[in-house]
Structures are given as structure tokens and as C-alpha cells.
Image: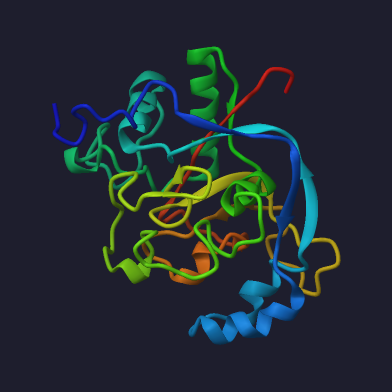
Length: 254
């Protein structure tokens, strides 16, 4: 057995989850903050932040979100059992041994949904992707923080471009953030179940792919600190590089 798997409690038949109670959540970025964000993050464009505006409050129902993103090893079980295609960068039906406890990446939205359906049938529990309001509520941990750990970026807390790793890392290497989640930002971006649309009242230009693509959240090892912000959302994006996912477990009555 690969050393990357021996005694690793993070890799299991079903994910460890954290349940968030129903209640309000802060979503998005105030319009008046956009120019400051462009100054703070050189190389970014104003349009990237405008699509996070305006900030609003939303009521989010109770949900249970996985502590970790889905790993290559967990995804390999799905590939073997369901006959689903493996990620193109794997050498075959199994990931390279040293990547087994890294988050799976380079997936389409449909791949993530197929995994959810497979795990639902296998376990008898309902699994799905989070919507972006759920994801942002988990990231903000009940307040208005900019990053899951606070208001100041810290390269030691997330595997983004600033960490200079230039690859995925085993899940959990950068420690827990907020309510106890790992790799919620950095390492891999995460698919959500939400169609991309501009927020009500937004002054952004209508996006080319509005309603035709799903939102990803969280940034990745290849992206900068600005993408690790709780409000950051990616929508009009054709690629799959660096994109993985984490699960929501259905609760009784949902």
C-alpha cells in the first residue's frame, strides 16, 4: 500500500462533514470596495471583482459540508466501480501513488455530479454539490471576514500561487480554517451546483456564459490570493484545470 494512504483517517468510504445551522449569511462584496481590491491585488481586473457585487444577506438552510475536498483515491474507487473515465492526467485508472491523498483535479462539473450520484446509491445517503451561498457561508464562518481565517491574506494558510508549491498538496497540509474545514481555499477550485448569474442589482456587464456554466469557488495552487477570498466567484470559464469538488451530505427532511 502507498505510504500516502497508511493510517490516513481523511480518506474514508464517506466524508467527514460539519453541519451548519440555518440562518443568515453574508454574500458578495460591497460595490464601494472594488477599486480598493484592484489596487491591493496587482494584475487583477476590475471586472473580476464587480461580478461579486453587490453584497447582500441571504438565509441559508441547514446543510452538512465535507471537511475535505474529494481525493484522488476516493475518486479512483468511483472510477473502478462505476466505469467512469479517469482524469486525463492519471496514467490509467489509478492516480500516481504520491497523489492519492491529494484532491482530485481537472474535472468537469458533470464528473463531480456523477460522483455524487454514485456515492448516493452506494451509501443510501444523499450527496450533492454545495450551492455557492452554502459555500460562502461555510467560508465566512458566521461573519464578514474576507478570507476563511480572517481579514488578512496569509500564504501559510492556503495553497495558492503565493505558497510557491506549484502543485496540489495532500489534503489538510495548510491546517483548518474557520469552522474546521481544510483546503476550502487554495489547492483546487471547487465546483458548486449554482448556475453563474449576476447578483440582483449588479452593475457588471452581462456575462457571455451567464446561465450556461456553473460557479467555481476557492481558487487553486495555480491562482493568486485574490481567488482565496470568501466572496470570489468564477463563472465564465471554459477550462477544468485545477478544479475539484467537495460534498454536501443530505440531512433528514431535505
